[in-house]
Amino acid sequence: MTNPAAPGSAIARSRRESVLRVTLPVLTLAGGALIWELIVRLNAIPAYVLPAPSLVAATLVSDWTILWSSLLVTLATTFQGLALAFAGGVGLALLFNRSRLVEYSLYPYAVILQVTPVVAIAPLLLVYLPQHAAVLACAWIVAFFPVLANTTLGLNSVDRNLVDLFRLYGATRGQILFALKLPAALPYVLGGLRIAGGLALIGAVVAEIAAGSAGAGSGLAYRIAEAGYRLNIPRMFAALLLLSVTGIVIFVLLSALARVLLRRWHESELEPGG
Amino acid sequence: MQPANPAVALRGIGKVFESGVVALDALDLTAGSREFVSVLGPSGCGKSTALRIMAGLTPPTAGNVIWAEGAAPTRRIGFVFQEPTLMPWASVAANVRLPLKLAGMSATDAAPAVGAALARVGLADMAGAYPRELSGGMKMRASIARALVTRPQVLLMDEPFAALDEITRFRLNNDLLSVWQAMAGTVVFVTHSVFESVFLSSRIVVMTPRPGRVYDEIAIEEPYPRDDAFRTSAAYAGYCRRVSGILHAAMAAERVP
Image (cartoon, rainbow over all chains, first blue to last red):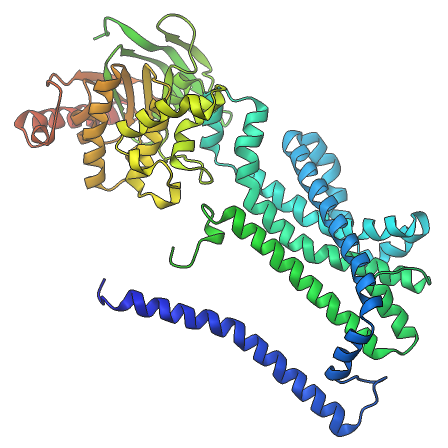
């Protein structure tokens, strides 16, 4: 209001800001890789101790067939684990919301499952379950709790007056659930899912590593363990790189999902200045 | 001063909360057909609780709610909360449609009623907007449109304009009177504002502090439609003085140690 030119320059500033937010991390990465490359070359460090980034990239290309098929296995496990975590977390939260007795009976065990390190559970699961089921169970165990906790919070945060309004107009329990509680909890569910996506990957990787030490498996983390035994360090790095990229892609996808679903109405996804 | 043709009545209503607090004690309150009744009282006197009991949202611990023509109807009352209480994920039209949707009506069938209710409160061109895109006054208009969409015979309003600025409140007060005259029904309006109650009401019921009972009531015998000229009239000032006097007496009378 004080300066008529302000809106235009503010847009220009925010555009410059968003360009910086992309270019700066990319430059940091390039600079880091360059320094790494120089250190390896100048000191003639052997590849089995520390491979240069260029060698890691070359390995990524040359080993692509085996890495890609392993990545697909890990991705399948991660998304199955995430889907089960979503279904289990939301389902259990709805059950808790419906019955306090169920909540009191089960909630402590959900917490125990969450706080017990999955690394310690994985070998046991591998003893009792077929390998794929055990890996999936690990991904589920670490991923379902954030969904459960966030959905519970969301269902309990429903505007009391809106609940009264629904009752006033004679809403059925189903109408209250689908037209009120679930939409109100949606931002919380999506927040939980965003955390769960990364955790499902971690759970899958932990279980694959555990399975790998038993000499069986086919996922990307198993490739890391296997390459480690063979001192194939460049492939370890290449597989690690793929895992990181996978984690980033999952996070970006789930964030985009939240943005699409919440853009019109929720504070967390409003356009800046909008 | 009982209305000849009651639309809804509270008879000997008492309410004791689980905490042991006595909110209401033997409250008798009648709202006549086509009457605009304000319930005026200090904060915490139980006037909101009385309104919730009337709406069936809170069960009373004693007494009865008596509706004209028998049992309490769900679709013949509209309720407006102190906050706009809109669903943030739904458009203004979808919010206003809610009572009809809950009654099982399709969006197509509900469209004419939704359009009419929005036009009634001056929001016809905001149907597709989301609540966060509206000002405080517009949100409250949407909330009133939602209460009107079922064509209620009784509109219950719980301090609906308390959070609005004075300019917006004056405009909404003016518009509420034309809404009331168009709906040809009853409004029960809970407020703690003497000025608002005098401007709007055909009758004001003044409550005592907790436990709330009716202390006194006064008819505002000024013709409708009332407009901004009424706000500056000597008659308005006189009524405000009298109602303030009753309110002060009510607060002093029940100061039980």
